[in-house]
Length: 166
Picture 1 (cartoon, rainbow, N blue to C red):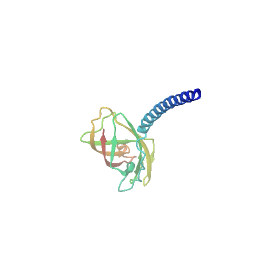
Picture 2 (picture 1 turned 120 degrees about the horizontal axis):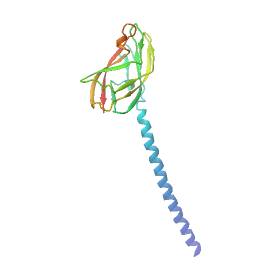
Picture 3 (picture 1 turned 180 degrees about the vertical axis):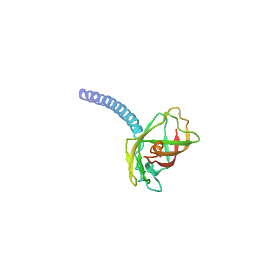
């Protein structure tokens, strides 16, 4: 009879250890999933960007006509720009003129210092951070790559895009 009582104790201990192990495994998986969500929010655009052309001088990721941006969140992406002009384009200068109202001054677009020669196409990595005071909604914007204030020795490339601020 003693052997049977001992085997019952062993199975109860095994069940208790199994329950504790499953609880710890659940906590670890929950922690890992929440961390991956945080990291994936920083790399929000992984779609391939189609090559720009004379018909579409600025191409957005996925070939879309709109950017979906969230306030106080950095979005990184790559755009393709085609310089059809006769002057160089300084690609580190990106501006948006929007209707019904422009983007807040705290909204930043940053790109590396690249120059696009006439007739050339370059893919430019950019990051966008929307100001927290930005009014949510959809805007029609003229996106310009290049510095328009230096038009004598620097060309610009423009395209109409929609920006949806959430």
